[in-house]
Amino acid sequence: MINLTLYKKEWKSNWVMLIIFMGVLTMYAIMIISMFDPEMGDSLRTMAESMPEVFAAFGMADVGTTLLEFVTGYLYGILLTAFPAVYIIILANRLVAKYIDNGSMVYLLAVPEKRSKIVRTQMIFMVSSLLILEIFVLAVVLITSHFMFPGDLDIPGFLRANAGLFGLWVMFGGVCFLTSCVFNETKVTLGFSSAVVIYALLVQMISQVGDKFEKLKYATPMTLFNVDGLISNEQMAWITCGIMYGVGILCYIIAGQVFKRKNMPI
Amino acid sequence: MDDHVTAAYLQGGVSIVNTIVINHITKDYGHNRGVFDLSFNVEQGEVLGFLGPNGAGKTTTIRQLLGFIKPDSGKVKILGKDCFLHADKIQKSLGYLPGEITFMDSMNGMEFIRFSAKMKKMKDLGRAPELMEQFELNASGKIKKMSKGMKQKIGIVCAFMQDPDILILDEPTSGLDPLMQNRFVDLILSEKKRGKTILMSSHIFEEIERTCDRAAIIREGRLVAVDSMEKLCSGKKKKMEITFADASMARGFCDDFEDKETEIADRTVSVHVGMNIDRVIKKASVYTITDMSIHTQSLEDFFLHFYGGNKHD
Image (cartoon, rainbow over all chains, first blue to last red; front, side):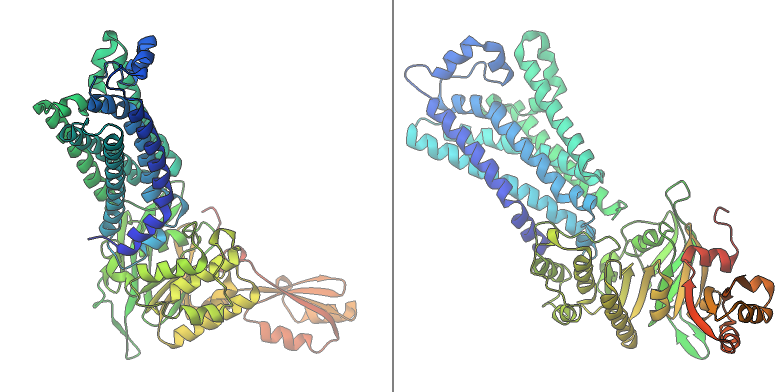
């Protein structure tokens, strides 16, 4: 199925980066949850009222009053999409394009192993490291909420929101991995995948600012990630969530085919 | 002859098997870069030198043999298998030394050798310890901080450690000091005795001369010649500069040769030496010689001289 030697090597090379992102996300998650105040109306809300456009841009305009709405509103709007996106861009580049760019791909391909197995190993590494990040974030939020506000969090709703979040990561991951397989140069790979992700996030932010730009939400894949819809278990939200997984998986499949057939300048 | 089995033919009653078959391959990168309609074979158990100036297409050819790139047209086969489609199967009996050595950052030399052995599915380090001793390699340092020569030695260890039947070596001695170059030549000669099939590229004629049975010469992506070393060497000219005790001796020496063979400047005579080497030495020995030096032709000069080709044809 995969090349275990390579899989272990990737863990050895990339665990530090994963830990750093976990650290940053933990800090934000704990900070946001600790600001929740069920009784008095929270301090963040006061801040939001003072500068509504800015908060709207980050998807924090009408954050509800329950702990779940609060957490998803403030965390899942931008923090848990933008930060992991940076991780995904860097990791996808490291897993394929970087090896080709610096020539060390030779030592992954001049071995008695099919190219398809090598690329599959890199994909599985990417997805499994994202899964670990997802489970970790999930655990941090669950544990923090449990200790600060026992019993306040709607856990099934929270899990549904996370199914969507992971779908978004799978989609970003697929696009960036495909980019990494298509281009041979690190700078092109990083440039292209950053452009795609920044476009997606930026258009979403603009579309949230006011009614004028609302239509723009149809121009960004971020709209597929409908947190509120998933929490309230709407069918449409599940369909768009499925599309995210579908796009991600399709990108991984195409990436594998590209890698198998491409000429490697190594 | 593009099949391994049918590639076997008879020569002097001995059956010859072509381990590596390059059959009319073209890989065009534009601007006259790449390889064009290139064909040659490497017979089982022979050491074939692959000679050409920088940028002639040696590495492009080797990348196709390794299955990193597909030829635009033509076929490359090793052990009868298509190099691109069955790279994984071929790799079981292939050792490769890349022309440009880049390893994984962040690993130290030993970690990399271990990683490489595991990737090749070896149970242990194979011949690595023996080779490291032979090349006086201490691989414990960080690869990033290693010199070119050290990295080259690691590359050599990785190529040979699984004791493969076929070796493809891209400029194997670059970065090695003369002592290590000699050790490398010894290694090649001993592997040849053990029946290994070796394709070795170089832009240095002498290196190939010492190790190879035959050589293929390539220039601007096109094959110039494939022949035995003996035959190729006969076309190679050297310039010998002999300084005699006085000018009359120099003139006397020159009289025995045709005008175009020699140039005279006072006591010093420059002779173009090829097949006539024995005659030159014997004639010169009649006189008193005070100094002598030999200049070997560069590969580029060699092409121009031997094939009379125009560099920009």
